[in-house]
Length: 313
Image (tube, rainbow, N blue to C red; front, side, top):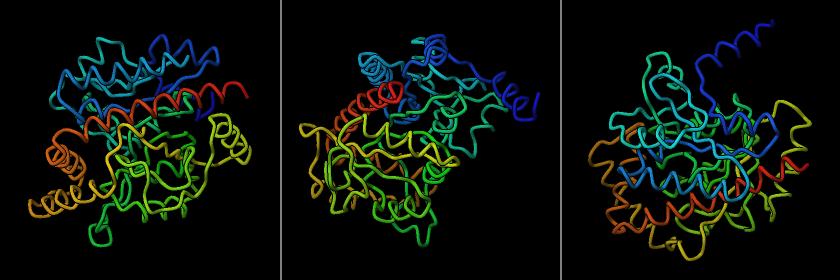
């Protein structure tokens, strides 16, 4: 057994792949990974469990198998049972896990929700090529002094997983986020649009680097990229449905207030994003959460279709 095979076997001993996911991967059927910080840090129980179940059902309805990824008592879970998902949704002390602390939580037998970076890493290890999320992390406003840049961007540069999102979260500096992605060779594809979506809003002032209009085109693009070897991931930016969006100018005012509050209260590090999203929820009277759920569901539907298209090539 090679060193790589030994390492993989040791990791497999710490990982639980659910029966539906294992069978689908073995049969070459489409599988879509899902993150779990939206469960552990996104909203209270039972809304978080209900939302996660609905997203999984959407993926299943498209003919793919959902694989929600999390760490529970040190075990890396690739696909959750309904009971495990409900238990995670009720957890009040879950860690927020990125690449830096994923192994820590496993070694210390902790429980945590996986961010985009950690979910990409786990999905790739499990052999899952497509991942649906809400929005990726990126370069925070004021990063020139705070150096607050999400690990999601580095993960996209190194891990060959297609990430379907509604773009970078609008609380970020989207222009600088796109610059970092370009520098690291990450293709950013707007789905059916010429401009970048801005999470809660369908458009932004920024031109999309690339545009594709069908899941089949996205799958074909990724397949050709894979021929070169050593490539990272791809970011698919999928605009929120028209009926669910909040206008960009309206959101800009809420975001400015939330960011000023964060500075005043000294919020920093991993606490910044949850604080801003929570404050924006208050400022929009709950509308931002409804939009967030709608865009996650929309992304899950597209991700399932891309996974199916990959399998058909």
